[in-house]
Amino acid sequence: MQLYHHPYSLDSQKVRLALEEEGIDYTSYHVNPITGKNMDASFFRTNPTAKLPVFQNGAHIIFNTIEIIQYIERIVAVSSGSGDTNLSGPRVLEWMQKVQEWDPKYFTLAHVPEKHRLSVTKFIRRVLVARMAECPDLASAYHRKLRDLYETEEKLKNPDIIRMSEEALVSLLDDVESSLAETKYLAGEVFTMADVMIVPVLARIFLLNLEEEYIYTRPNICQYWDTVRHRPSYKKVIGKYFDGWRKHKTLIKTWCFVQIRSLLRKY
Image (cartoon, rainbow, N blue to C red; front, side, top):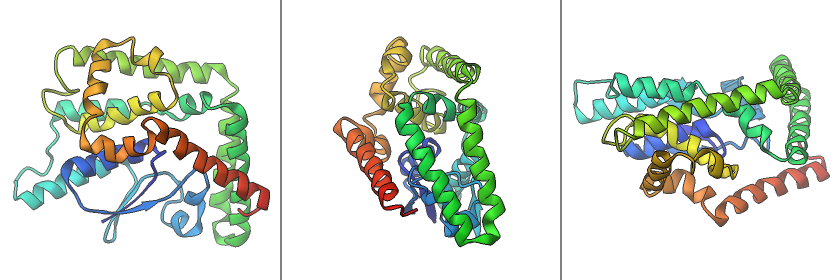
Protein backbone atom coordinates (compact mmCIF):
# COMPACT_ATOMS: atom_id res chain seq x y z
CA MET A 1 0.00 0.00 0.00
CA GLN A 2 1.22 3.47 -0.92
CA LEU A 3 0.11 6.85 0.33
CA TYR A 4 0.97 10.04 -1.54
CA HIS A 5 0.63 12.88 0.93
CA HIS A 6 2.27 15.84 2.63
CA PRO A 7 2.32 17.20 6.22
CA TYR A 8 0.76 20.48 5.03
CA SER A 9 -2.30 18.71 3.63
CA LEU A 10 -5.16 18.57 6.14
CA ASP A 11 -6.80 15.62 4.40
CA SER A 12 -3.45 13.83 4.30
CA GLN A 13 -3.23 14.23 8.06
CA LYS A 14 -6.66 12.64 8.47
CA VAL A 15 -5.69 9.57 6.46
CA ARG A 16 -2.29 9.21 8.12
CA LEU A 17 -3.86 9.43 11.57
CA ALA A 18 -6.23 6.62 10.56
CA LEU A 19 -3.34 4.49 9.29
CA GLU A 20 -1.32 5.04 12.47
CA GLU A 21 -4.29 4.44 14.78
CA GLU A 22 -5.07 1.18 12.99
CA GLY A 23 -1.42 0.10 12.84
CA ILE A 24 -1.36 -0.31 9.06
CA ASP A 25 2.01 -0.56 7.31
CA TYR A 26 2.29 1.56 4.19
CA THR A 27 4.87 3.19 1.95
CA SER A 28 4.93 6.95 2.36
CA TYR A 29 5.58 9.33 -0.54
CA HIS A 30 5.82 13.07 0.16
CA VAL A 31 4.28 15.26 -2.53
CA ASN A 32 4.61 18.94 -1.59
CA PRO A 33 1.78 21.01 -3.11
CA ILE A 34 3.45 24.30 -2.15
CA THR A 35 6.44 23.49 -4.32
CA GLY A 36 4.22 22.17 -7.12
CA LYS A 37 5.26 18.52 -6.83
CA ASN A 38 1.64 17.48 -7.18
CA MET A 39 1.80 18.94 -10.69
CA ASP A 40 4.58 16.60 -11.84
CA ALA A 41 3.36 14.57 -14.81
CA SER A 42 3.85 11.19 -13.10
CA PHE A 43 1.51 12.20 -10.26
CA PHE A 44 -0.83 14.31 -12.39
CA ARG A 45 -1.58 11.47 -14.79
CA THR A 46 -2.79 9.39 -11.84
CA ASN A 47 -4.75 12.23 -10.26
CA PRO A 48 -5.62 15.17 -12.55
CA THR A 49 -7.20 17.03 -9.64
CA ALA A 50 -3.70 17.17 -8.10
CA LYS A 51 -5.33 16.91 -4.67
CA LEU A 52 -3.83 15.04 -1.74
CA PRO A 53 -3.87 12.42 -0.42
CA VAL A 54 -3.88 9.57 -2.91
CA PHE A 55 -4.10 6.02 -1.56
CA GLN A 56 -3.05 3.08 -3.70
CA ASN A 57 -3.33 -0.62 -2.97
CA GLY A 58 -2.29 -2.54 -6.05
CA ALA A 59 -4.45 -1.34 -8.93
CA HIS A 60 -6.97 0.18 -6.53
CA ILE A 61 -6.58 3.97 -6.24
CA ILE A 62 -8.72 6.17 -3.97
CA PHE A 63 -8.78 9.99 -3.77
CA ASN A 64 -11.74 10.65 -1.45
CA THR A 65 -10.64 11.07 2.18
CA ILE A 66 -13.60 9.36 3.85
CA GLU A 67 -13.52 6.51 1.32
CA ILE A 68 -9.83 5.97 2.07
CA ILE A 69 -10.49 5.82 5.81
CA GLN A 70 -13.37 3.39 5.35
CA TYR A 71 -11.16 1.25 3.10
CA ILE A 72 -8.52 1.21 5.85
CA GLU A 73 -11.17 0.05 8.34
CA ARG A 74 -12.21 -2.76 6.01
CA ILE A 75 -8.60 -3.88 5.65
CA VAL A 76 -8.32 -4.09 9.44
CA ALA A 77 -11.61 -5.98 9.70
CA VAL A 78 -10.59 -8.52 7.06
CA SER A 79 -7.15 -8.95 8.61
CA SER A 80 -8.67 -9.59 12.02
CA GLY A 81 -11.22 -12.06 10.65
CA SER A 82 -14.14 -9.91 11.74
CA GLY A 83 -17.35 -10.28 9.80
CA ASP A 84 -18.06 -6.57 10.19
CA THR A 85 -16.48 -4.77 7.23
CA ASN A 86 -17.61 -1.29 8.26
CA LEU A 87 -16.47 -0.60 11.81
CA SER A 88 -17.60 3.02 12.10
CA GLY A 89 -21.14 3.32 13.38
CA PRO A 90 -23.76 5.86 12.25
CA ARG A 91 -22.72 8.51 14.79
CA VAL A 92 -19.07 8.30 13.77
CA LEU A 93 -19.94 8.47 10.08
CA GLU A 94 -22.18 11.45 10.70
CA TRP A 95 -19.33 13.30 12.36
CA MET A 96 -16.88 12.31 9.65
CA GLN A 97 -19.14 13.76 6.98
CA LYS A 98 -19.88 16.89 9.01
CA VAL A 99 -16.18 17.65 9.49
CA GLN A 100 -15.38 16.93 5.85
CA GLU A 101 -18.02 19.38 4.68
CA TRP A 102 -15.89 22.27 5.94
CA ASP A 103 -13.43 23.33 3.23
CA PRO A 104 -10.32 24.81 4.90
CA LYS A 105 -8.92 26.38 1.73
CA TYR A 106 -10.25 29.93 1.94
CA PHE A 107 -9.97 30.12 5.72
CA THR A 108 -6.33 29.03 5.56
CA LEU A 109 -5.31 31.25 2.65
CA ALA A 110 -7.04 34.28 4.17
CA HIS A 111 -4.78 33.98 7.22
CA VAL A 112 -1.53 33.53 5.31
CA PRO A 113 0.42 36.78 4.82
CA GLU A 114 -0.49 38.09 1.39
CA LYS A 115 3.09 38.50 0.14
CA HIS A 116 3.85 34.86 0.99
CA ARG A 117 0.62 33.59 -0.53
CA LEU A 118 1.08 35.52 -3.77
CA SER A 119 4.70 34.45 -4.04
CA VAL A 120 3.75 30.77 -3.80
CA THR A 121 0.83 31.23 -6.20
CA LYS A 122 3.10 32.89 -8.73
CA PHE A 123 5.59 30.04 -8.41
CA ILE A 124 2.91 27.37 -8.92
CA ARG A 125 1.55 29.21 -11.97
CA ARG A 126 5.01 29.05 -13.50
CA VAL A 127 5.26 25.37 -12.61
CA LEU A 128 2.00 24.76 -14.46
CA VAL A 129 3.16 26.64 -17.54
CA ALA A 130 6.39 24.65 -17.54
CA ARG A 131 4.51 21.35 -17.25
CA MET A 132 2.24 22.33 -20.16
CA ALA A 133 5.30 22.72 -22.35
CA GLU A 134 6.76 19.41 -21.18
CA CYS A 135 3.55 17.40 -21.53
CA PRO A 136 1.33 18.74 -24.33
CA ASP A 137 -1.10 15.83 -23.87
CA LEU A 138 -1.90 17.13 -20.37
CA ALA A 139 -2.08 20.79 -21.38
CA SER A 140 -5.86 21.09 -21.04
CA ALA A 141 -5.82 19.58 -17.52
CA TYR A 142 -2.96 21.86 -16.49
CA HIS A 143 -4.84 24.81 -17.94
CA ARG A 144 -7.84 23.98 -15.72
CA LYS A 145 -5.58 24.02 -12.66
CA LEU A 146 -4.15 27.36 -13.78
CA ARG A 147 -7.65 28.78 -14.13
CA ASP A 148 -8.50 27.47 -10.65
CA LEU A 149 -5.56 29.40 -9.20
CA TYR A 150 -6.76 32.66 -10.70
CA GLU A 151 -10.32 31.99 -9.52
CA THR A 152 -9.10 31.30 -5.99
CA GLU A 153 -7.23 34.60 -5.86
CA GLU A 154 -10.32 36.43 -7.06
CA LYS A 155 -12.51 34.76 -4.45
CA LEU A 156 -10.06 35.70 -1.71
CA LYS A 157 -10.82 39.34 -2.53
CA ASN A 158 -14.46 38.73 -1.67
CA PRO A 159 -15.00 39.24 2.09
CA ASP A 160 -18.31 37.35 1.95
CA ILE A 161 -16.54 34.14 0.94
CA ILE A 162 -14.05 34.46 3.79
CA ARG A 163 -16.85 35.25 6.22
CA MET A 164 -18.87 32.19 5.17
CA SER A 165 -15.83 29.96 5.61
CA GLU A 166 -15.22 31.36 9.09
CA GLU A 167 -18.89 31.01 10.04
CA ALA A 168 -18.90 27.39 8.87
CA LEU A 169 -15.86 26.68 11.05
CA VAL A 170 -17.42 28.39 14.07
CA SER A 171 -20.62 26.35 13.62
CA LEU A 172 -18.59 23.13 13.40
CA LEU A 173 -16.55 23.98 16.50
CA ASP A 174 -19.68 24.88 18.44
CA ASP A 175 -21.14 21.48 17.61
CA VAL A 176 -17.89 19.79 18.65
CA GLU A 177 -17.89 21.76 21.91
CA SER A 178 -21.43 20.60 22.69
CA SER A 179 -20.61 16.98 21.93
CA LEU A 180 -17.48 17.03 24.09
CA ALA A 181 -19.57 18.27 27.00
CA GLU A 182 -21.18 14.81 27.06
CA THR A 183 -18.38 12.45 26.01
CA LYS A 184 -14.59 12.27 26.29
CA TYR A 185 -14.11 11.98 22.54
CA LEU A 186 -16.12 13.31 19.64
CA ALA A 187 -18.41 10.31 19.12
CA GLY A 188 -18.20 8.57 22.48
CA GLU A 189 -15.81 7.45 25.20
CA VAL A 190 -13.19 6.00 22.85
CA PHE A 191 -11.08 7.55 20.10
CA THR A 192 -12.66 6.87 16.70
CA MET A 193 -12.40 7.91 13.08
CA ALA A 194 -14.54 10.95 13.98
CA ASP A 195 -11.59 12.16 16.07
CA VAL A 196 -9.21 11.35 13.24
CA MET A 197 -11.20 13.83 11.14
CA ILE A 198 -11.41 16.72 13.63
CA VAL A 199 -7.88 16.65 15.10
CA PRO A 200 -6.25 18.03 11.91
CA VAL A 201 -8.80 20.86 11.87
CA LEU A 202 -7.70 21.88 15.36
CA ALA A 203 -4.06 21.50 14.31
CA ARG A 204 -4.68 23.85 11.37
CA ILE A 205 -6.07 26.47 13.76
CA PHE A 206 -2.93 26.22 15.91
CA LEU A 207 -0.68 26.34 12.86
CA LEU A 208 -2.29 29.65 11.92
CA ASN A 209 -1.88 30.95 15.50
CA LEU A 210 -5.65 31.37 15.90
CA GLU A 211 -6.09 29.20 18.99
CA GLU A 212 -6.98 32.13 21.26
CA GLU A 213 -10.09 32.88 19.21
CA TYR A 214 -11.22 29.43 18.18
CA ILE A 215 -9.91 26.97 20.81
CA TYR A 216 -9.29 28.62 24.16
CA THR A 217 -12.77 30.16 24.15
CA ARG A 218 -14.20 26.63 24.14
CA PRO A 219 -13.17 24.80 27.35
CA ASN A 220 -14.24 21.32 26.26
CA ILE A 221 -12.30 21.54 22.98
CA CYS A 222 -9.34 22.99 24.87
CA GLN A 223 -9.23 19.98 27.20
CA TYR A 224 -9.82 17.59 24.31
CA TRP A 225 -7.00 19.16 22.30
CA ASP A 226 -4.60 18.69 25.22
CA THR A 227 -5.60 15.03 25.40
CA VAL A 228 -5.33 14.10 21.73
CA ARG A 229 -1.95 15.81 21.29
CA HIS A 230 -0.44 13.17 23.58
CA ARG A 231 -1.46 10.30 21.33
CA PRO A 232 1.44 8.61 19.48
CA SER A 233 -0.40 8.98 16.18
CA TYR A 234 -0.63 12.77 16.60
CA LYS A 235 3.04 13.06 17.52
CA LYS A 236 4.09 11.12 14.42
CA VAL A 237 1.69 12.66 11.89
CA ILE A 238 1.41 16.27 13.04
CA GLY A 239 3.56 17.05 16.07
CA LYS A 240 6.73 15.90 14.30
CA TYR A 241 6.31 18.75 11.82
CA PHE A 242 4.38 21.52 13.55
CA ASP A 243 4.77 21.43 17.34
CA GLY A 244 6.87 24.25 18.80
CA TRP A 245 9.99 25.19 16.83
CA ARG A 246 9.29 22.43 14.30
CA LYS A 247 6.57 24.58 12.73
CA HIS A 248 9.09 27.27 11.82
CA LYS A 249 11.56 24.70 10.51
CA THR A 250 8.93 23.07 8.29
CA LEU A 251 7.63 26.35 6.87
CA ILE A 252 11.03 28.01 6.41
CA LYS A 253 12.39 24.97 4.57
CA THR A 254 9.56 25.10 2.03
CA TRP A 255 9.68 28.89 1.70
CA CYS A 256 13.43 28.76 0.95
CA PHE A 257 12.84 26.07 -1.67
CA VAL A 258 10.28 28.22 -3.46
CA GLN A 259 12.47 31.33 -3.35
CA ILE A 260 15.60 29.55 -4.60
CA ARG A 261 13.75 27.80 -7.43
CA SER A 262 12.13 31.08 -8.42
CA LEU A 263 15.50 32.83 -8.43
CA LEU A 264 17.05 30.08 -10.57
CA ARG A 265 13.89 29.84 -12.72
CA LYS A 266 13.76 26.10 -12.15
CA TYR A 267 10.13 25.07 -12.28
